[in-house]
Image (cartoon, rainbow, N blue to C red):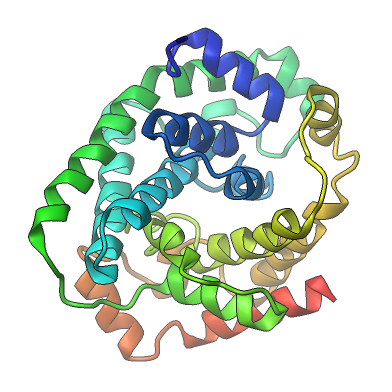
Length: 298
C-alpha cells in the first residue's frame, strides 16, 4: 500500500481536489481508517484562508482540525470529553505548525493577497502547498492520535460551551438540515481555530454546515481533475456561493473576520472561551451566521 503521507500521494490528492483543506482531511481520515466523503468534500471552501479570501489560516490547519473532530467523534463516547479532545488537538496542531516555522495565514505562505489561479500556478505555489502537507501530515496524524489516546481513558469532562459547535447546529436548524451529532467535528474551530484568534470559528462552522447540506443532498460526485482546475478559475462554483455570501455578510457586519478582532482578546483555555460565551458576548455572531446562511440558501 502506498504511504498516504508520501509526496506522490499528496500530489495526487491536491491535483484531484485542488483544495488544501480537503486534501489534508482526506489524507488524515484515510490514515485513521475513517473516510467520510461528504465531510471531505464539504471542507473544500475552508481552503485559502476560507473561501479563497487569503487572509485566514492555511487550509491544511482547518483540514487537520476536522480530522481531529472525526476521530474524537468516532473514538470518544463522552461528548464533553470528545469536544475537549478536538479543541486540544487543534490547538496543538496550530502550535506545531508555527513551531515548524510556517506562517499561519494563506497570504503569507503563497505571497498572494487575492486569489489568482494563473499566478498561483506560475509561482509554483501548488508545489509549495503540496510540500507543506507532505512535510507535516504525518506529524499531525500522530499528534491527533496522541490527544485521542490520552483523552479516552479519562471518562468524562466538565461541559464547556463551544462557539463553532453551536454555530454549526444553529445554522443547520436555520437551513433545515439535520445536524445529528456532526457538529463535534467543527469543535476545533473555536476561538479562531484552536484558540489561536485566527478566522472566526463560528464563520468557518457556518461555511461547513451549508457545504455539508449541499454534498449530503447531492446525488452525484463533485470531483474530477478538470472540474477542480476550473474551480480554481472560479468556474462552476455555484455550490460555493452560499459560503461566499456568508463570508461577505460577516465582513460587512463585524470589524474583521478574526476571533481576536471581534472579541478583542484570545482565549487560553476552553473554559475561558466557555465563560465568554456564557456572558453572551458572541450571541450576535451566532445569530448573524445563522441568519446569513438562511438568506444565502434560499
